[in-house]
Image 1: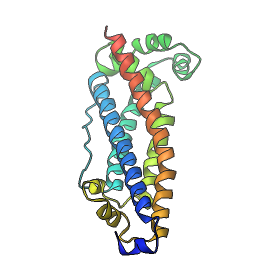
Image 2 (image 1 turned 60 degrees about the vertical axis):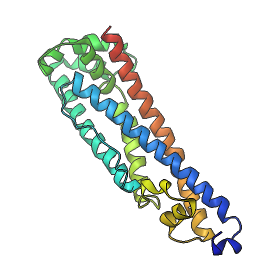
Image 3 (image 1 turned 180 degrees about the horizontal axis):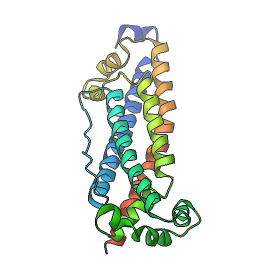
Image 4 (image 1 turned 180 degrees about the vertical axis):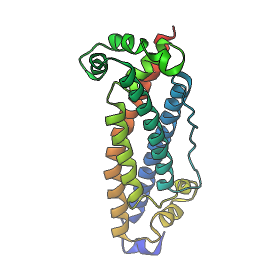
Length: 225
């Protein structure tokens, strides 16, 4: 037992809580890496992008890993913006507006994109058209990705940003020291509050992001049958 535990008997429980919340944060980070690589794979295969996959930096900090995902997402957004600009350039204004209309049927949107996708990519496939519709003609880039980028940036800039992702390999007391550098009640409470606050937003944003990418991959599979 740490010496300060005699003065703060709740510290052992709080250390366990910090450890549990840290693991949840790492799980969300890992899911975001996995989902981003799935999206990169789809873009490379069907829209002719040349994006590199990303890896979690196990010896890095939470901020460093958040930044890796953010940078990948920014590159993805640039690629999707290119496709969007090409569609806007090649389609008649009325047809382009239909792509942005949430009331328009997805099958109709795919048919519209199919008319010009070969000019943009050099080949025409229904899967490529479906990917373009799902990612360009939806709120994935403007809403879901932007939200996740914002949350990741907030986490990186918070108390949690400087924490190493690999501290879970240490004992609980060592984790605590690695996270806070001391065993004081106020610091533990601050760490728990910071984890809890950011996890609520991160889980929500991460789940929506993962769901959106799953929708894209499922649509591609249907188009390739």
